[in-house]
Image (tube, rainbow, N blue to C red; front, side, top):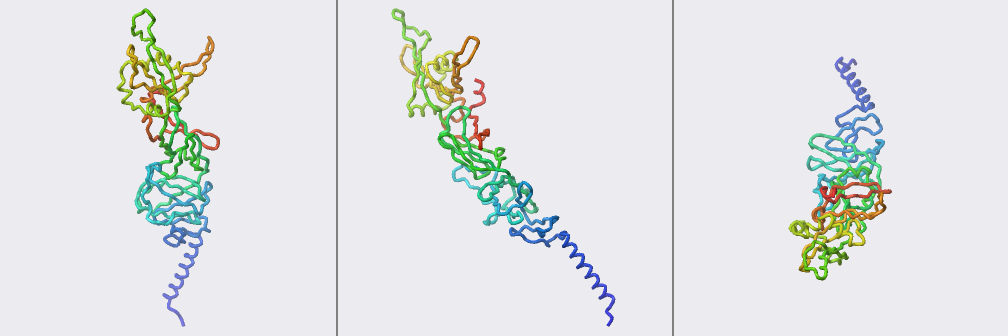
Length: 377
């Protein structure tokens, strides 16, 4: 029986369409839902095709190593850029719509169901170790986007916290803003953030700390006693004594607020800042170490009464032997007004003005805790 010509034409067209479809499948060019769903719902064609085109639904990411090889089992954690782990009880709001962990699949893909568009810090963790910190910027949730995150080489971020003033850190914590990573600073100034990507030094590294002078000494100035047979007059000449201050008194002196020192505009304050008289006063102390506090207190001439408020001076540079053409002598220590030059003196504060300095396998942290106006004194 002869079939109609139209039937033969339809049959031939169907055969051609099937052949074209098979060829396209073989070439990996079919889009629009012909890919394979991965464990995380990110659509992509068969992984055996090296030239495949990735199809996306929503916001997705792919985790690869430095050579571009996809990594499985890397957990992603998201934080707001302003998040600070040093703030008591501060936790970021849930940023994703699913309670399911963001874990890269066998092809390195992971779907990220954000609750709102915005900018985020992404931490990648593999086998308990942070392998990258990166930025995720999503302006519109309705646009499908694929972000690639590459792992970095890690290094030890541990060392000692040092203050430019020479004072000691009594307590504190080092943290990385926009992450949950923080570490306590011990009584010797040591900290240990663990192994982190080597570019962490470019992130917002902060320190919340309280500090105090390494030692506190008090210099008392009294008028020189009159010479027998000469009437008592104020010659303006003084003699000085230097002694260590008990711990409880030291804490009180070291926490003198700026206002107290500023109000002391009388003779004692001016005398303490007079270079010649300060040098004479400091020479009465056998040792003056950097970071130590010297409280200069003057007695009222002819009254034998000490001022109630001294002038705390911080030793910024200790006395050192200096060689000259006429021989070797000991230089006078460099001192600055403690209350004026140390911001929030005696109180806890937070600083992001940190400098990372290589130290062996880790990094020391130097904090410029002295006001700029005081560094040239």
